[in-house]
Structures are given as structure tokens and as C-alpha cells.
Image (cartoon, rainbow, N blue to C red; front, side):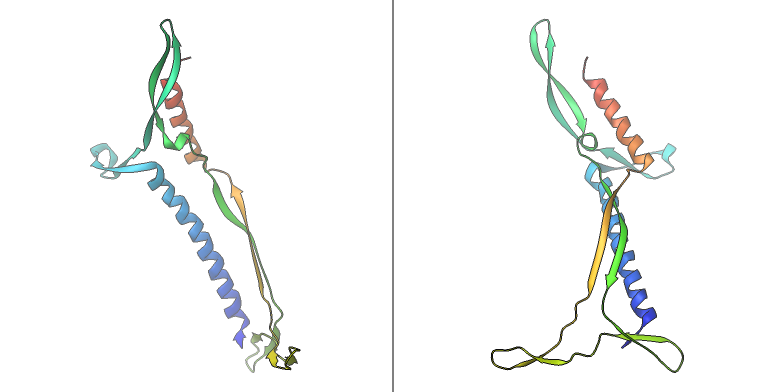
Length: 163
């Protein structure tokens, strides 16, 4: 038997941890698309500098001599869709016995299992109870700062491609 507040606190902690996991994934985003240069610039107050990860791709273009290949540096961040997630809803369902103690606090427990026959050999097994936990994740909009950063890299890419 546990206090109701302890159960609610445990569920809140689990949701907070899950949300933190989603935020950590967002932090890994920077490591995936950017590399720390190890340089510190005086105009940057000693903060580290991140350089975008690029791939070089051949891009065909038509010229007076025919089709020629142009090498284009493409920032990875402009090639991969950026998806953010957030927890929308958490539902916990369970059959619980509720009682109160001398201090007036609510205590809960799973219902006491009654023995019931399993059939074929007459073995008895305790009744089981099922708890259900449902977590709904939804796609979230890309933060404005990140969206502007991606748009900037897309403009850099477009500037390299003629026409």
C-alpha cells in the first residue's frame, strides 16, 4: 500500500523524465549537423564556434559547351527534415483499492488477488491486475530560431546553384 501522493509523484516524475529525453534529443541535433571547431573568437566572448557539416555534391548545369558539373557544398541541415516532438497527453488507468489512514491521508493498493482455478489440473493462481499507461506524442513546430537558421543555410545553397 502506498500513499496516493507518492503514486501521483512517481507518474509526474516519469513524464518529466520522458520530456527531458525528448529535449536531450533536440540537443543531440547540434552534434549531428554541426562540428565544434575548437576555435574561440574574441568577438564571441570566448564561446566555442560551431561549423555546419557539409557534403559536396555534383550539380549538373547547362552551358554553351553542353552539360557541365558544378560542385556544390550542401549543408546537411538543409537536406534532412527537422522534426520536434513533445508529450501531448499522459493517461494512467488501473483498478485500485483506496483507503485512508489515521492522519486522513489516502492510501492506494492493487486489489487483493483472489485465488481462482486455472482449469486443467486444478492449479490455483492469483488473479492478476492490469495497469495501462498511454503516452501521446505530437509533432511540434520547429522553434523560430532554428527555422531561421535552416532558411539561412538554404539561401546559401541556392546562391551556389545558377539559374
